[in-house]
Amino acid sequence: EDQVTQSPEALRLQEGESSSLNCSYTVSGLRGLFWYRQDPGKGPEFLFTLYSAGEEKEKERLKATLTKKESFLHITAPKPEDSATYLCAAQSGNQFYFGTGTSLTVIP
Amino acid sequence: EADIYQTPRYLVIGTGKKITLECSQTMGHDKMYWYQQDPGMELHLIHYSYGVNSTEKGDLSSESTVSRIRTEHFPLTLESARPSHTSQYLCASVGAAGVEQYFGPGTRLTVT
Image (cartoon, rainbow over all chains, first blue to last red; front, side):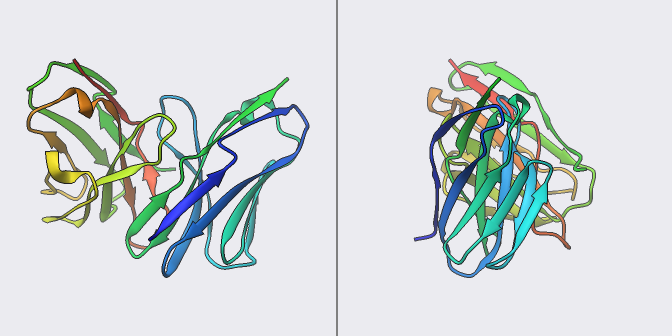
């Protein structure tokens, strides 16, 4: 069964305290692994696409990596404005499978 | 930057009413999707479309319908709203050359 699992469900960090979010996936024929940021009451905002194991992408304080079974979103020296829910999705064919997200709170 | 719009943003409606949630995109994307999202839960696919006059059912399609008469427009209709339909509804699109989905701001529906 195709599925995506994210951990932890919630994460509280002090400002400047780096950490990683995990996304484990089991899908047949992975076409892409996606990370999104979602603020309360809004639609998900696209962050990264990863296509193959070993690939890495960076944007400001965020870096996404991919292995054959999981993806990590590394947050370096987070700021309060990084507080949001981070969603992971895996694409198989034309279908997208989403995790339940990690709710990140960065405390000043 | 993606230009995808949803209206209304918020809707409170009584049980049994027929409602249509609107979704439009100005990017000429072929593929469009409707998802339902509840707090702390994953996005559930309701319907999707690969182009004009092409629609497919997702996991939660049984109580709703969609149409795709124009590329830019993908409305979702609930024939008879029920309290169990209370949720956030998200529309997304993907361009022919891309794979990433771009989402609209969502419609928060409350059925009383």
